Amino acid sequence: MRKTQARSSRKLTVLSLAAATYFMVSGGPYGIEELVQDSGYKLALIILFLTPLVWALPTGLMVGELSAAMPEEGGFYVWVRRAMGPFWGFQEAWLSLVASIFDMAIYPSLFVAYLGKLFPAAVDGHRGIMIAAGMVLVCLLWNLFGAKAVGNSSMTVGVLLLSPFVLLTLFALVRHVNVVSAPLVKADFLTGVLVAMWNYMGWDNAATVANEVENPQKTYPRVMLLALAAIFLSYVIPLGAVWRLQIPPDVWNNGSWASIAGIVAGPWLGVVLVATAMLAEFSSFNSLVMSYCHLPVAMAQDGHLPRAFSRKLKSGAPWVSILVLGVAWGLSLGLKFDRLIMLDILLYGASLVLEFAALVVLRLREPALARPFRVPGGLWGAVLLGVGPTALLVVALVKNYDEHLDLGRFGSVSTLAVGLVLMAAGVVYYFVAGRAKPVAAAAGAD
Picture 1: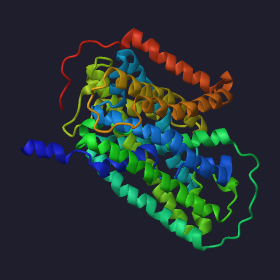
Picture 2: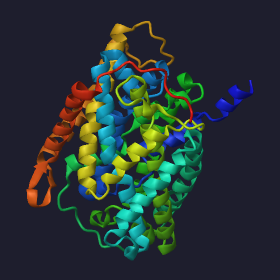
Picture 3: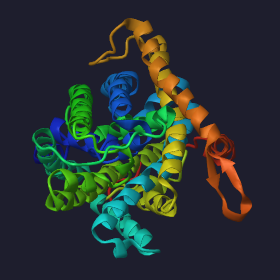
Picture 4: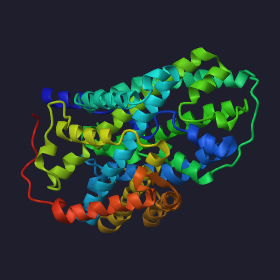
């Protein structure tokens, strides 16, 4: 009895998982600055309104059904493997982990960008990379204490994070500022859509820790809707309030919320926003470590990776997985923000398409599967759910074709080509070394 209570006390509840999911997907309004800079206020708000309907809500509904039906460690990897077999399950995991290399570099980069607003000299030269690496190390160590520690810290950080934006919104609604308004030179719709997709991306990450969630069949559907509402409101309300002041779009860039707060309310609020921005990026990274590190565990248990990846501490933390992924994430530090987003969306998007396919295939192959939450509309409802996200991913493909990565003296290469090579590498690795091998029971806590 005591052991059962102890295990339950370590599990994530609706609020703690919703808070962790909030940071897996968003981390607050930080990150939408590029959207305003590229698209202007009106188009940015339109994109932020439409993207949840076409991209985030369908994904959240899909995750709600599959995570409630199969609340297992590994989440989306388990869904795709069960629906379409080990090859596609491996590709799902491969795409997600490779995408994480680019995704996880964004948060330390934003952390350093905001720190530079307060202490420019602190991030000069290689200092910024060292600070980013230090943030990665701290989050890895934090995750060794287990998922519950991460979820509880996310709730506290969420309150601290949003409080300055409440103040900023109130000041923006009652004050007038003298700012010379400049027209937007050219609204870049495609880039704006990509930035919005990234800011509404990552719903399936919450599913990888299903074995550490209390009553997952009921918890996941509630968490998806609760987190989506919180994210949407935290984007549009402060942005709409600042639009009233007609601050020029060219003022917006990574880290510019602090400058805007200084214009609207005074330098003191700018300093507060910088501090909470750094906290938000830290918490987003911390929550995503919790998500990604459970994926290699499930793969190891199925024989796709060495058994060592399944080893856990008494806290439930898969320490081998955490350390190996941490090294991979650290190696991607220093890449440019926009290139990171494009590669992240391209690779993550491919994995997302497999998840929507798994939703439909499981409806056909396992109609009797217990589904505590079901996407409405029957089979056609499940099919149509993936249309919007897939259409947006086509947009991402078009944009990736036009953008290039600078390889220095070796010239440049399109981000689409890089993404396709990384996808193909997963296929090659599977047939060379990744096919499932018989594995004994997963290793227990060290």
